Image (cartoon, rainbow, N blue to C red; front, side):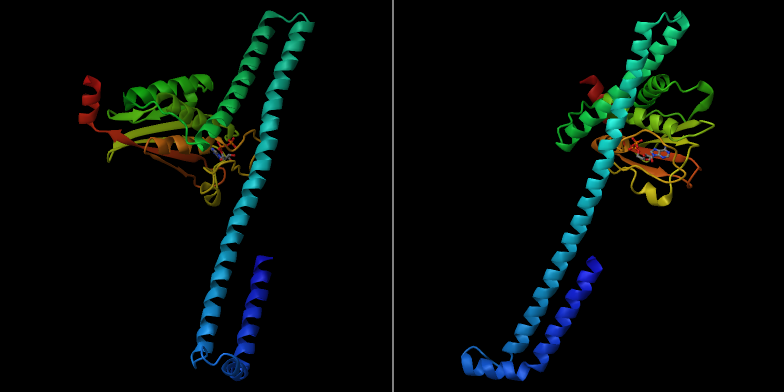
Length: 312
Ligand code: ADP
């Protein structure tokens, strides 16, 4: 549609130039008779050049409006699918909790089964809580009101602590996890915000691995940076999608993607938090079904500053 409009527009400009050039002499005569004081020999040529400049400006403006509209349409589309995903994400754990409660209320349920039900309800309640937190985090971030509580930490201790807590929360079996590297640098971080980062990345490794779950976390302190990598052996991400996964609401669809719950908010929140720490995040995947690696780089808090802040 846009290309057709441009062709029509350019044809009109071409016709106009053709008409102008072929009627140049008549226009000159009319001008000289009507307003001889302002018509010089070069006036018509000048008018033509200015006319062309104006047309180019209008054309440029149209192009920008088109780009802006396309972006808006994409955002609206993603937003619609986000609403559909969120509604589903809210309804399904709630329905499952309701069902367990009704069963517990109506029948005599054996003790072991009760434990099982309670575990499932806790999982569903956690799911709901994570979703609600994500939505609240997003709205705070949108308004740039997220208050970070930065403190100095030994990176090694903090990473171990956060990993331990996330691994337990997501019930990752010990044999499926490996940690590589040792570090002895310091960072300035908001512990709770980094917990959100770890939780989202680890939750994703679970969600986007269909079989043979593996999680490898590697850490290093080099070139004044703390480098953390979260690698899984899951469904992978194509080169084209790697550019988009951090965008708000973005979810990958395709035949190789199993039907997995989600809202497309997690990685956006992760990137915003990493940015607020002065760091950056990137993703690498050799392609579909070949696993993914999310790499975070955070600035190291210099040893001198760290000691100063500890003693103050
Ligand atoms: P959500 O998981 O709720 O859809 P995210 O922002 O966490 O939202 O992720 C965005 C998209 O990036 C996901 O929909 C998924 O397609 C892709 N993705 C994220 N993590 C992984 C991963 N570890 N492996 C493969 N794809 C992933």
